[in-house]
Length: 422
Image (cartoon, rainbow, N blue to C red; front, side, top):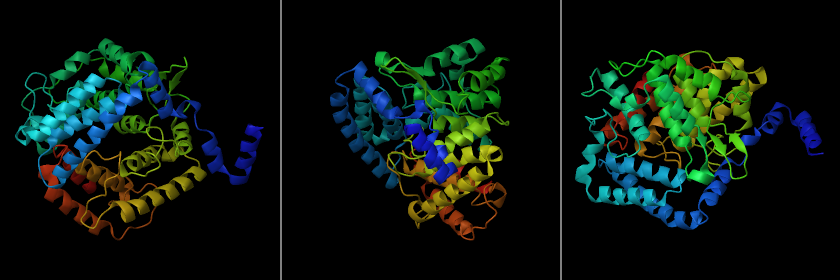
């Protein structure tokens, strides 16, 4: 009876209803299932988590306020991000406590902030206030791109890559992080998969860093993993797999992981028709699957969505393109009327922006990716935006006034300036 009712509604309401009815089963209630698995690992999970989450909120507010005042907070910002990872992705309470204590110490000693921007002579990474190597790799990728744009050669080679520099090592590593067994480990590997996989993919395919010698089989290995091993062939997306306490194994489609992979692979991929259908189907599922975070729109997620639309536009049906254009127009209206501020900044979105710098980056990148500043990138419409140049000037002025105090070290501001010129 339920399926007959859905079919009738689809006939009455058209393709929009049908798309919603096709939400993959594994994507439903993803966050609730993971929290249940955390409780299966530690029955006191919620009781132990609550005070630590509250403390992190208080400390994070201090980091944000100091950045807004123009203070250097790069180290505190990195510790804050990693504290959020411990609290959001693990049941490692000693690890949470250590990072929260580190954050309090960092805020008490602002003179130590510079260490976050120094390159480590041992492994060549930046991001010295992170503990997790894949977090340092993420910072290092951004720093390498900023150095490259400025024509600067890094002092040290990125030797942290040596640990995975063979097809065998690469496959073994991702066999571990692409599947999370939270009831037995208390750890969701989703963020590590996103950070490590995407940065390794980008570096390997581009033969970067300059002067680093990748094993000759790495390109083939990473593309085989991308296209044949870790892609969901039913949806065209990528995402973490989970072994739940119920005994069920699920691969959950992930907006951010899919965005990063599509951006990194410079070739047309198969299954883009399935990818587009899934994109519209999961709109109202909570992030990291769908478009909203607790029902709230953000430039970050909107940027990911429009990139997926652009990559799959040719594979869409006429009805999907019509809906896609309408969705982008609604996102643009929200961005210009609710997010973009008169001084060229973007209003922070709770849960989506880790700093003022990153909030600016995602706002700029959303506008740039839809072709707001450049008609040649306007894949979804041929209309004009007469206020675009005025907005570009205001945004540029804001970035230039705040670049020295960016909490992410300035790389996001540099990238944003470049993006507006493309």
